[in-house]
Length: 523
Image 1 (cartoon, one colour):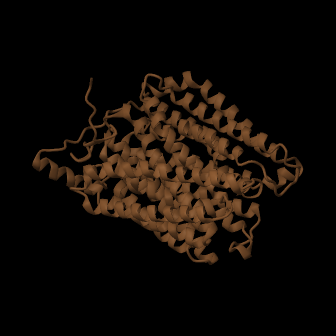
Image 2: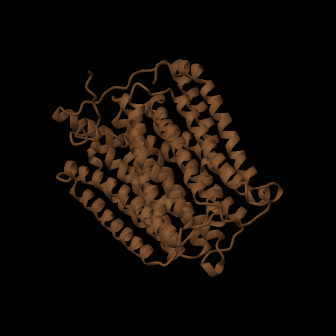
């Protein structure tokens, strides 16, 4: 058996869960960034559409979803510039740190209850994300340059970190935003973005030369030549016609990615509205007790798992990167404190109203639960081609909306409120999550396999443009919920998101033979 060689420092080659320890530095950095992003996103539409007496701005659903769609689109458009700046000037590590600092400032601005601070905050979040988003994944590509077979598993584990942050952000920012005050929720998101930046900055040397700017990389190589360690591995030269075909594969996968995110991102828009206005969220008696116990397990078990991963990383890296570990550990102490306070409040209430934002945590919980299993499947002999994974993801996504279409079949035409069972959303999020695990981390992995290292930052930026187009389409289409519900009904609205992804899924699976040839041996 060929020994797998991971890039980076000697510390990075110490393994955790079969992967280099540096992957988990990135895991926690991304976790806190996703905490801030999804925490803010979970309450943005709810805040904008809430009445003034409830602390909101009383926007219409169409206006709120329009801003939501534009914001999420720009969040995914900005990485093309951030990737270019990192490739040419900053290097991936500086780009990640600067981006995190800018996003921290953006969340701080949103903690103030004024229109100018909201728009300033959104602008800073977009700019910071452009530097952060493509370049943290580019660092993973550098670590696994000579371990291509481990990449799908690595990105799936990384995706678990993404969703651990999303889970905690939605849960805690959502709870504090809805129960304490919207702008307290926005402010909380910024605190953990700041901790994520500090944790990364003080442990970045674990990556050796990976992610350095061109000038810093040259200085590093000269120093390494002096002491005779850490040789630079030359990248394999790929013929121009082969690379052209691989770019075509990336383009085709990106095209189908637009369809996926146009439907999936209803989670922050129309599905949140469905949870707020059409779902029975007030629980009493035994139902309330069942929810309290289930919510406690749902919260505490994943947090225990992530805390265990944190402890294992401490054991490996604390001796060399103590300050980074202290910032990371402090953030977890704060998180545990907020979680215990929240659960104590919920158990002391006579009746429990499930926050509308709570349903969004199901996606992240399911990913934390299923990501390790999916990762193992992708590393086994049962690993299907990329196009089959994409097709499965799209079909499962469509089936999730089919569940919502069926669940809303009893809601009259034009109704603005209803009280359907929470079980429909719980099942829909399960199917959506399994679809996401089949498509999103796999897409990131294949971009890194099919694109030369010198272009990886820009190509991740282009990939995120496709995701951004899907997000804008999600906001635009989600904003039509009132018009479609008035003219037809809510079932018709959700059937649109059922049929389109399923058809797209079968088409992309049918392209498997052609795509396999265009990949020229990449698996």
